[in-house]
Length: 255
Length: 362
Image 1 (cartoon, rainbow over the protein chains, first blue to last red):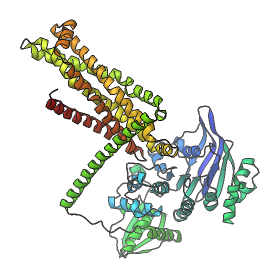
Image 2 (cartoon, chains in turn yellow, green; image 1 turned 45 degrees about the horizontal axis):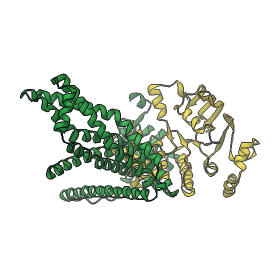
Image 3 (tube, one colour; image 1 turned 90 degrees about the horizontal axis):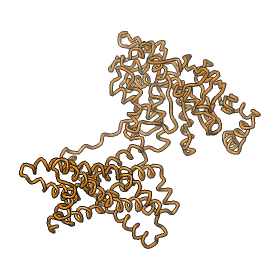
């Protein structure tokens, strides 16, 4: 279970002269949930976007499932893209399509799938993401923030990817909804054997789901390890993050 | 597409009463599976098994097929999928066709009446805000009014003047060709003067302003509505009617008659130049006939429509802006609806004015 599905080595990303990451290394192992934390503006979302190829790195290697993302083009890249799913912060649903049609979009790439099969599968994914059945016919503008995130997750999972990228899945959700989402992520990981790259600020989510945590600071991954490891790290920011009043509340809640 | 499916191999063979599947059982190989399989499905040595496969097996199992040979994790996934299988809703009751037509017609009529009522409400809100501004001049936002006068008025001068000039040219040109046949070239002055001063000057100005300003009003108010700025305003004790609607509609009310006058002058100049070139009617002759033969009532009849057009355009634009929902899609829809409605309303009102003036004999 220790095969790396994502390997980032010596990554440097910059916008103009503004350097976001410099010499960043990161691994995601198969079947694990990796939580990526960091202060605002440390480039957590930028890292996610770089790994999925939306941003081209200035230097360094990004290998996903053994393939260098920046070197791929055409069908090879398309084939790789079908092996991961991305859930953006606000779901990034297509506003002109209903929830079910949104989930059907990736399924349209499968040749030979009948309409009935596609609809059935889309409805199954919507239901697995924890949305009620009547959400299928609704448009994104009719959904609450939490429901949009769930629909975004359903779309990301449409093709049963091996890796799922989640950008702040619980931000803006109420504690009950966030808790349900945490449970959902773990349940789906167990059922589907996903590897999850999870960008978050939510200490409860880190406690509840993540097998490992990577801390982004000073333009690189400062440290990685389990929650227990994080509590012993000496770096001032990391200490503040995991020992602050909110962190203590989250830890106490779990003990 | 072959490149994407190339790597997905599933072998299915029939063995007596059972279907034996091996290889990759995923969404990519789903189309190869039979819709109505035999009594038993046995899987052996699957390299991949995903939710689509589990969905297929769960669906068949519900029809009474037995599934054998799943490993533990695969069985777990199958159970998870079976548990998540959405239950079909009871079908919605269907109406007979005639009732559906009647129902839809009724809804559309009600929508239309609601729209008219809301426009009346906005007109009332504008008038109330105007009344308040007169009683408490301190609350009135003069800077905002000046800004909108510049936006809707000054900025529209070039396009309005150019359009009207060209209309004058066209009228002179077309009129000359017809009137020359009777040797009545000099009446081209009356033709241009009456048509521009009475109808075309103000009507076309209003149409241009409807296109330009109604869309701008909807877009600016609508994007504020979308980002909850209007709600924020209310909580800060600012009245959106005073802050947003009053300056915008009032600016239109002030500027549209002025734009109409500019359009009139520019149209007459265009007509005069063309008459001079085409018919040899000198500018001083044009001016003499214009003053001697064209009554002032034509100008009054034309410009008196301007305030009505201005309020209608402003009200329709502001109303559409306030109707914008939370998504960008509704902003686009409302903006185009505002332009269409404003132009349509301007033309209808112009027709009503024509009848009214004919009846009272102006």
